[in-house]
Length: 541
Image (cartoon, rainbow, N blue to C red; front, side, top):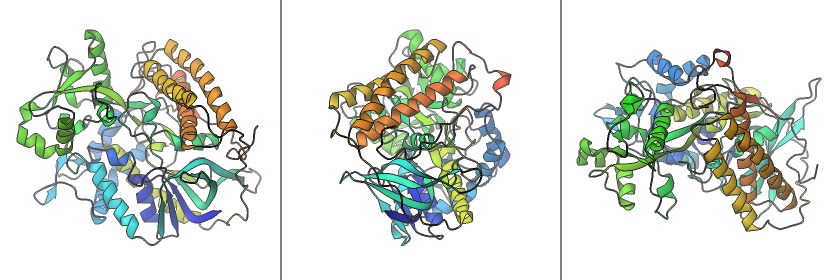
């Protein structure tokens, strides 16, 4: 058994920031299922939203966030995150993040939904720069241990003494990918920082690791999850179906491109966003994504165009060097021709429900970043608020960990009892169900939904989930099986949440209920299961 003071699952901005804050309290162990830099953070292009200019202020940022969130934001969470923004930027600078500058002050851009320039960035690879600096700071800290290729399978639960007999989290059962062994890691506090679940959809800007592991584990442990119906589709993902490299099919074209003056054109070469929203290309993401989807359906086109040629070649190469270089690799010179783009699944606004202190409904289990539902984003995330949220809630989680104090180290944790009789399922079954879940979600639970499509999705997912669970318990655990099991559960949670919200609000748009209803104002969709005692142990139920 591995014991540490604080156990962190995930090595993105939330997990690394928490570790740096908590390292002053005790020993921190970070587990990541791939290489340490492989996280959603590493792929974030745009930047961090924060008030830095004299012509901007907190109230404007708060107003923009609340308006984008369509009546579901938690005002207290919004105010806390926005007002802590400048301090978080200063902290990143102290940790060595090299943001772009305009003379002595930080350079800031604008993205959809913002009424002021406030996006602090590092060219068009902000996430990669933040990840680099935080990993270096973690590497230098003696109290932090980071283990790669360690995949959490399920959380370890134990009953607390007392009349309520609450379930407390003691840590996690973890698959050592290189050895195939499953070992328990225990801790005073366990922090979910596992990122999003974009891979639940066939087309996504997310990397392959985004399989919703944290949300699935927390739900199985009895934690409340909320607002899973609100899936943000980024309006502009590169469309290049003939490219063999997977990055060409999921490469994000940052919203900052439109913030600097890029315009959207339909198949006829005409601008169309002014017909849909007064802010045109800078409208909130849900509006832009649905507008593109509608234009494509009206004309029967497979994509629309994003044109930056009028911005000037020198500016484009300087401001967006990564996007320029990657598109050139795919045969597109964005200084001379428009970029073919389509919407793709990008960000989960729902997740494990947390309070202002990053606490879930399970004692000693915390959650930060995209896997958490803090109330900041509401029904639609305001662009570049996500990295800021992860920073603020990581610090809150560290403070919560300090207040938790010592927890008695468990003398014994039930060993992982592997009763599986077969080594691995037939590859065809795994690949078939992997594709089935993602195709089903894209076709039936996408940007525009209907009651009929959701019913069909629920019915089909139930059968797929039953099959996945059957061979999960029958076969030895592998990373593929764990991720597929988590992905299918998250898909089911999205569908259940979407079916219960009989209105259209923010990112959830249902043709059968096209208007927002007053009875759903401020009403969150909360799902919770009974915790499975010893669920992580390989024992048939």
